[in-house]
Length: 306
Image (cartoon, rainbow, N blue to C red; front, side, top):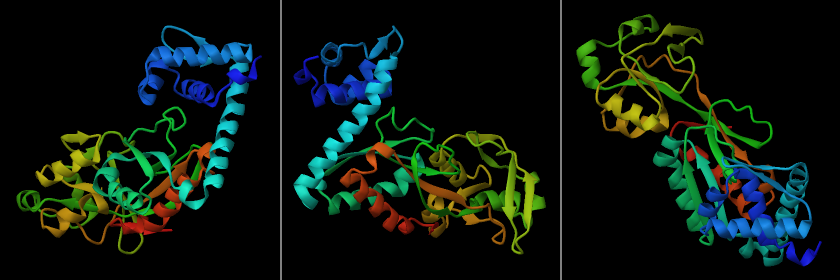
């Protein structure tokens, strides 16, 4: 093997292809032609002396040798980046790009404001923001940090609990005027509910009462949706009652376009967490973002910091 042919550029290309499983996707991500990606991989395999990837018409997978080489490459690239951070000092550490994934509605309404403030403090850091409610593979998608609502089970990620997101039961004044205002949980089955189709068990609504008791009532309706922003619009349009995160509707409540239903009864709060890809956790700019979001997250309405 001619070690001079094992360049960091070729190694980075191999790592991203191994993670994403697609040459074309990595080419688009890096802004180069697919032929460039193919050449980098060919030259790296020739330098190493063994096949690292197995290519089919549909997907690229790692060989056994490739899996071992991938694990070592990730560590090498992380050490190279950390060494550069340390050599450049504090100012130089605040440079580069961070890829963030965030729950869509939270990102549009509030998290983007925190990210703008972060960039104002660290103007040399670029942000690549992806908004999705899907539980994506962070490593495969090249994400450094993810903000997620709800319980998490991915033990391969570093997890930082940020707080709890309070929820309210809300509806439009016009809906309540037409259909009446429920006073207790037992009144809800006679009302239209706006349900989230991407949340299991949304046909039952759990509420915590003023004395700490728990109520579980059937919750149905003619409108289901898989996106928080669409649920917000359905509420304003008077399509029914829905449990909503405080941050999703705080401006609408202040403007009188929505009202809290049964103020003494609340859906349980939802955990808000930050997932950090372990291989990126030691990078200085990622640490800066993690610390900044941990400090500022309570500025989002209804987020109770842990």
